[in-house]
Length: 197
Image 1 (tube, rainbow, N blue to C red):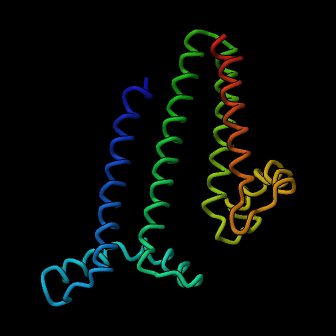
Image 2: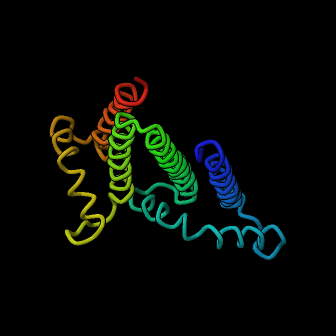
Image 3: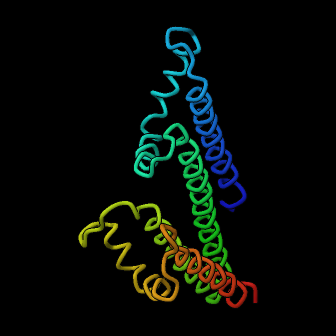
């Protein structure tokens, strides 16, 4: 059972890495406002933290600069994005291991119903992954020949009708969240109908 043996290790590693990343971002935020002497020990340490986190914080700082928000707060946005990414990555890995375990059990029992249920569950999980990738990559330009273009072509038939019904509110598009809730409900339905019966 991969879900019980491998997943806890992956979960622990992912959240430990996020914890270290979060600590560095909080230190950067504190040093940004404390503005220590650049020639002292604290100032040199602050410079190292800034240099280490710059490539992660810079996109958020650039976005904040466009909207005239204090760019020293950019680590908070980076922290939020890191939190969401860590959560979704651990969920995706957990889901993948759950599907592998389910398919293995279904094949071992010779149950067509269980195998079919986990195949449908995997397809819905893949759709959730594509919607998540599309959400993360929404700042980039799609072209027809790239992987992102493929993701857009797969998710457009599902997302566009919902976007017509519920247009974006300012810069927030809640249609993807509604679609994700519906897909999660369908996953539960598939498990109840095909696997648990």
